[in-house]
Length: 581
Image (cartoon, rainbow, N blue to C red; front, side, top):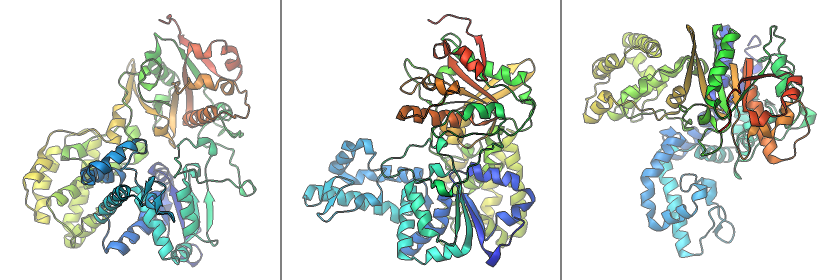
């Protein structure tokens, strides 16, 4: 930031897969924020970049209006409502192709025809009248949803690629805007995303790809293979960790597909990593034991403390151990991020401190503004025949009544704080929507809007609410701590004060499968399952800054205790007092 503005007023572009990394950058930017997060720079997710600079302009170019939504959930909802128009024969075709999740997973690229008029992706021969009818109905449905302004994320990439092909000069324009592009978590970038980078930036842009192939835990299908081919001649290895000390570094550096030396951050008073051994009778005491170790090491006194227990498999199993085996209260997170609800109260749900620390306090502001925008949509209040957005709403109020805008901003900030403090704000916001806000926008409170505002049923079927339910509370004397229980996928990119890795079953018990690596006996893995297992273990065990615990059954560790102790693990057998059933 000290070098800004850069030569010719060019900017930097920082792209990530989630907002977690962006929030992390913002939390450390401090005084440089005004330089970093404004024009000509761009900080955001890859999806937000594609939407802002390519997909939305492409849609406007095609339909002379902005799309309403770029969101998979809304797209799936729309598809669900319209698939009845496909007819029995076409729906039967989709059912027979159930493993491909048709029609929901259909992409425009799937409809390409070869020179024989055959659609290879859908396995439809258009020379056959019946198959041609199925093809046309599916394509018509895709175009129908697109013309209604609702795009899936795949649709956004399709429009972006089409837009670049139509206007090749976009490459020069983007390359004049940005001199440096930084792509984080490159190992999770798909081939489609990687191709887009190549097509939108020319050789005058320095693209820095930052990632770790040992953390590539997301599965790609045939159309979405990994998009990172590492050029070893142009690679700089970062071996030091700013997160954890050498006691943890020495453990995770052996849990690698591609072995790497990791240097700890040099912190003093390191805590020896702990293996919590349990039996069939004590598995549900593991979280308590983890909590006791946290308290013993005074980690609960840390200001920004985050404690999590993570595992590979979150679904219950009849006879094998998965995350719910450790705690009956666990419910697997739904990976669909829901941002709209059917009633006001659902927008006012408080979240745990750990969640807000990761997401930022603006989470509540976005939720509240989302509720106000929903009211305007129900009341059919638009801005020049277009739906209000967060930015448009603020600008509209500011331009029309600066005093009301100041009042609106103060109320927003107050409500956000009160929601997080679990104070009652429902009645106050209800009154605001039916009085001041209504008077400003001059809308009528119709039956649908009354139901939205007054309904007392709070929905919890959104990702954030479900995650907040997976909070295990442990008390010792007057001290109480919260331990969030999650999948490994759910915590990727996060930093915790303490993490407990829970052994779970995936074709085999995962820690038992990689026991040699736990004992620092590294050999280059060749089996697919071991490679996958090592990546999951590496991601899960590299989250903590202070304390790493691993919980596993005594059958998995039997005979290995001495070797693990020699490798620097503290083997805790406090829970091995009972007999297995």
